[in-house]
Amino acid sequence: MPYWFPSLRFHRPAREAGCSQIDLAPQELGSLKGQKEGLGSEQETEQGQQETEQGQAGNALVEFVALAGLLMVPTIYFLLSVFALQNAAFAASSAGAQTLQVLAQLPEEQRSQELASSLAILAASDYGIEGQQVQAQLICPTSCAQGENLVLLVTVSVELPLVPWPGAPTFAQMTSRSVSWAGAYS
Image (cartoon, rainbow, N blue to C red):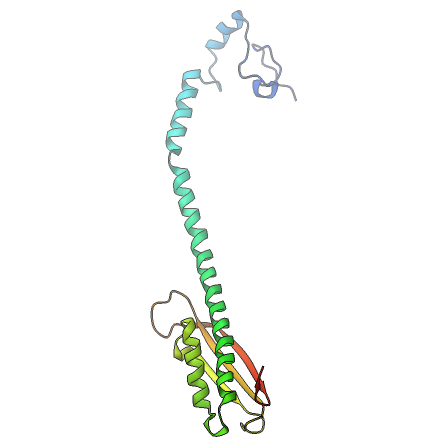
């Protein structure tokens, strides 16, 4: 919709026309000097822009740092949690395999639940897992005799990362199941 200004040559605003300035006839300039409603002088416009720029100085840096902090801290904590889960999975798998290899080589009278637990704790300590986080359960379907099947379940509890007090809450448990068929490790 066109706008009509009686003292201007254009029938639409200068921004819509693609012009940066409005051309006025010399006789029309005199009539516009008295009309300052809605049109500020060029000096007033420049002062307003300078005040706006000065009021905004430095805000982008503060906003960027705040946004980076709000987004990066949870992301890093999530990644640390995933790394703790993977470490516990490796520890459980390795502890189960190594403990079962040792138990498969021992005679029947030396195989026990206590030995399985201590061997699993020793193997999991290579991954930085503390002893109270590891549980091992030796299962012998019939007997733990030489040549019988051995099943070992190793469970590693995963604590929340960066929690400084002992006995921090756990948020997952990783369990590994290892089987020895007829004395041969698999």
